[in-house]
Length: 412
Image (tube, rainbow, N blue to C red):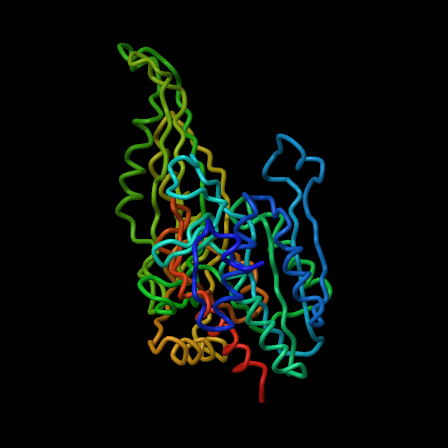
């Protein structure tokens, strides 16, 4: 199906095979309202394209199938994952991505309907345009072209696609990686197609990510009347000195690849709704984004050390529920980073920069296996926003970049 038939009577003149094919596939994927944790057939589209080229498809399902039909516990909903592989030898280069997208919010606030991809003003508009259906389309087209041109290439090519990246991320990539490890299937290089670019395509490659450690701190005192504070224990007052120390604590100094570890308070909830009542509890949500200079265990220990000091003489008590979303990872140098730099330079003419900024990605589940991992994709200026969009002209270029990376890694 051509772009002209799917995009609101808008015309676009593709200049390369990469461009038109990547645009068409992007549109086909974006028309599917695959709000997390649903895939809505996106993975089947990829299988239908790549199986004829020798890719073996394996669907993996994790979670509670019964939960999908109606109201579900998002922490246990069944997730559809796809492992596509061509070849049995090493090295294995894996493209990783997700077909799920974040909710659109009120569709009436969008300039164009979020699931009716539209080309306008040089952009492709719609949910998933940047994060990250165009990335999936680009590496699919790159793989197609590469295999057609080099059917007897070295090594293997794989794709790891999940519909659980924007959600809890417990039944997606992490479970697939566990399955691969259990059968000794090792990824050598992993290119995550997340939107890494900032000002222009390819200007930033994410060669690592900070770790993310969250916590919910509950401080318990004794409820009472504000006029009789001696008969109560105010948990908010008990907590304040510790919060002040948290805000000035230097957790580490960072290093050449990572900024210093940061602790941020994101929510504080306390009170009964009445201004004359001292509450029994106050709850604080916080998050560490941490570098490779600090471990999860060290952050937990230091947090408890500060709290223990301030609560040692208090009648209030505290409890913390911890959640590790991912440890930091870094691919400082190696063949994958070199291949990415070469490909970006040849296609765009710019010298890319390495960065570890931003949030987490599914690369955090793959890096601990020993794989070299980078993220390289379109611009991230509108991800998760109303009117998400991406430059049309970047789509074919991204597919070319991915194909050049395959050539660098899998050809003699």
